[in-house]
Image (cartoon, rainbow, N blue to C red; front, top):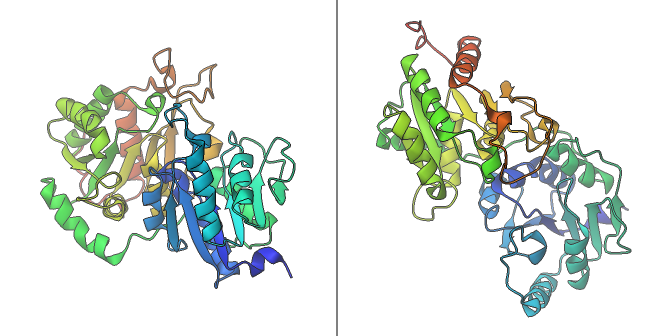
Length: 369
């Protein structure tokens, strides 16, 4: 019998942001549906760990800040810490490790840590040779493959069956019940439709300019729509800058980096009840895709659309063609010409999408010019 299907204590490694964790959901669902008795523990970064609350297929979470994921070289030189971490994994007696990575990441360093932890089965997708760090080494995926499909491809390679390939998240009854109260606290009328604008993104190069976001908010207000500008506490300066240009917009802060305020599920519930989400290539894109909420995506030239775009919900992606696409940069040295999109074009795209779906845009546009 397939030893992967016999595994009962599985470590799933995904060490990026919340959106990346959300996109591993279909693969973990395949694991649980194929092996319902298996226990799945997610190894996540501090930034991504909150995403586990949205995935009902995760039984436990381990949070770590590993040196192999240190983009800005801020992890201090402390090899004893990593040796101790491998020992802590060994104490959990995992049967198998599924190492999920993006197209540019190697699975071999975490694979070697899992080897040191005594995990007998280790699978990952790789472009380079690294001996026996992995017991199953998947090769051949193109860079353009969508991240959710990349994750599914890995679990299917070792024997799990992925029947449902869509993103899916568990918002929860409590979060849905709390959503109207949270909206009221922002000053927004929860009985009327609203649009979510999210100006933030982990990479500055993926952010549509705040002044233009503000003009988009004003344009949507002029059409009669309520606008909710959202962000984490760390993104509060961005949200404030948007509202300088859009004093009629409402503000919601929280959902990802607050321990004493609204949870990520609360934020997902606000996304779920929105008529439309306008954002960049960042978390709300994946939440809206999982929840079937229409999207306008201001998609910068940093990444290929095929890698992260929404797959299930109605969406319009806006990007200016540039010769440097895809650049995969965190900071743009030339002023983000890929996002040189006039606010009116965004408003017109939003209006076209809302008018094409009368069930999600009732009456509120009747007085629009």
